Image 1 (cartoon, rainbow, N blue to C red):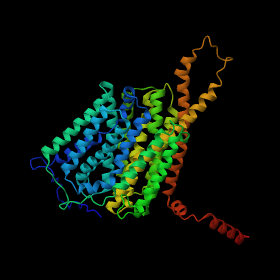
Image 2: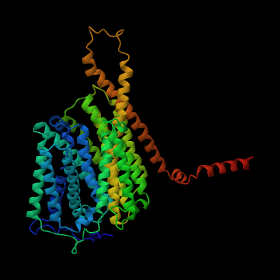
Image 3: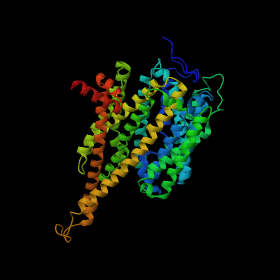
Image 4: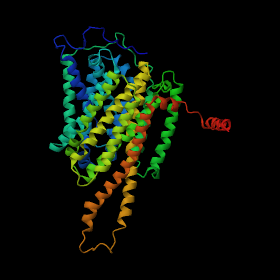
Length: 537
């Protein structure tokens, strides 16, 4: 097990020994707060500039989403190496190295449209982004919570993460609106130069481990195979609807390759002395249920990336800057969710069943509001409450489930392997699966609606000489059909989120929870039921 610095003793001041003596102690942690925001605002491809990039390159939307999920895959795959890197290199080496890598990746992203190069660039950029974020947050952890209380640290961490996600998307859209989409990459390069300068001027080399840990023994082949498998799965999920899923021969081939790679990965992880991910983490109590709940939550929240984008782009037809400004209303909801997490987990120390139910209830309320408010002529202010509820649900589920994972895995090294699996589900697989599911469902309903309602347009009720068919189809008819299809998909979200909300609220009732956990097998239940009836007779 890797060593962990103990919590601060009572009355002992917080110190950051990597800073030089002349730097005021009160601003030292705030310098790292600014640094982590600079790192989090960087990316290989920016959500807010997707439409602008499509307009100046030959990329499809699926290409840009593939690059985005590749960056998330790079972040997820790097989790098991975080502590080994922290105890092998100094803070300057880690932060300066991460900043230089991110800066170079952003520079390459401006000057090439080669998809293979950009996939590698985005993957490496995601790894560097996680490295910089972890180095900053691990150094100010005891400043945030001197007792290392993860019921405080994880909600505060998600303030940084969720604010950066929405803020970077809005900033990319702002640069794209006023200048060009390349300016966001230039901004990231500038912030990385600021990080390098601050480390060279304000800090000295410092490593918390006097005897540096060696990187020997890390199962790099398994990590590489897992990365390849993640990219294969991403390609299938992102491009599946575009190529009609398994009707395309290369999708079928990739699915077979994915099964082979997955089998070989399981073989290596069970036969290597020190595997990249120890499968023992799945034997800890509650780990599998946590992953299932996380997958369900992210699958439901995936309608944000697809259904809302379709509505604002195709029905309301907003340009990117206005759309990202609308999405900023998610931040008040996120902060409200973080406040609920702190109140629930830190102050009251209540069980999380009802909190999960509250999170899924926010998704239910969000889907209901979108279902009843979607309209071609509805004002944008009508959707703000729904967006805030979506943000509240996201922050509640993400922070609470990460805290639950920490409570379930006591071993620190195993916990970071658990974070690896958790974030594959959280940031990566569930989001990509949601995109594939929602786009396929939306396409099905849209085509069905066009055929069903289009059959009502005939020469008996339409006069071609007085009816602008082209304008009607492009202006009102198609937009109305899109709205109806969106309502139909949101209907499924309402039913599913309502079921999960009711389930978690019932599990919080002691009698129901005890009864549910002790339900026998159906044959046993049948035998007991028959014997009880015979005794009564």
